[in-house]
Length: 106
Image (cartoon, rainbow, N blue to C red; front, side, top):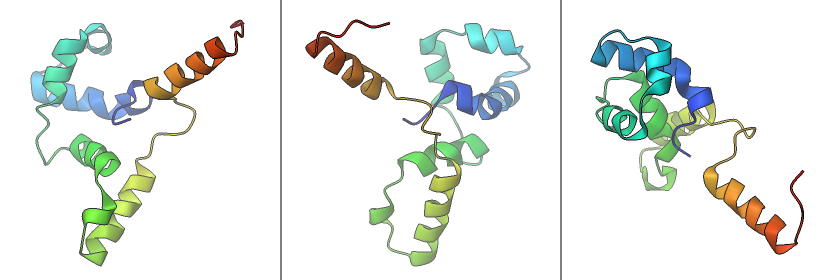
């Protein structure tokens, strides 16, 4: 998972306000998926949110320099999404296993 809205909103909201003018928190929450994705995809390299996202997706094994790899490993730990948030893939896998076992969701 690259973005977790409940966890990352404190980084997303300031980015959106600075980049696209002041907006209320409710305006951000009511923004459609397509508009949100389009705006989020235009993050410049110098934004803190960019480094958060990059730290989550970077492949440490592809970094040759030890210091740079250490830097990104530390950022990856700091910016990791807590385990309390499940990805859609994990939710679908769990639901599928419950359906396969004929369990009733309570």
